[in-house]
Amino acid sequence: MALPPAKVLLVDGDKNSLEVTCALLHKEGYRVEKADRLKEAFQCLHREKMDVVILDVQMPEMKGYEAIPLIKGIDPDLPIIITAKENSPELESQVRHQRVFYYHVKSFGLEELKLAVENAIKRGSKEKFIFPAGKKFR
Image (cartoon, rainbow, N blue to C red; front, side, top):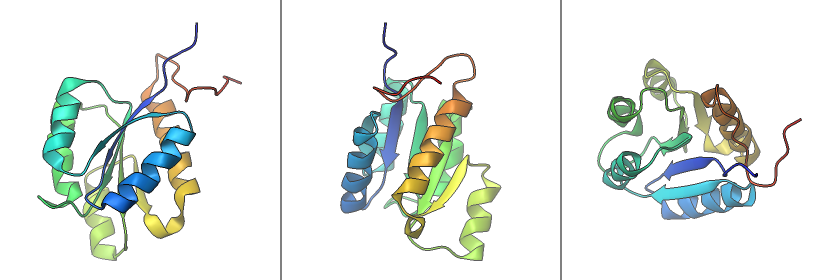
């Protein structure tokens, strides 16, 4: 029996970035839920269990890192990857202070983000094995 694909919640106020990243994750076999507002993301997290959240720092309602305590209130063990278009020492300090799984600057490229998602899912699934559809356990 095949395992279900891992579920990724992708939260980004930039619709172009949302679509590009969503396409990459779908191609990797993940089941992706998208939200361009934090309210939608919170509703999704209340509705179903996710394996990882990718959250952009620039959201319309508040900074992404400010939403992390709210997300952790829903699921304390959920790995969170924060993305940012541009980096600064102040921003990096704010993000890392929130104890996220990974901080991804978008200019690093999508391959690095893909690896971060894979590692977050592996680490987050200590008692169960979750792999993207079509991937084999080695």
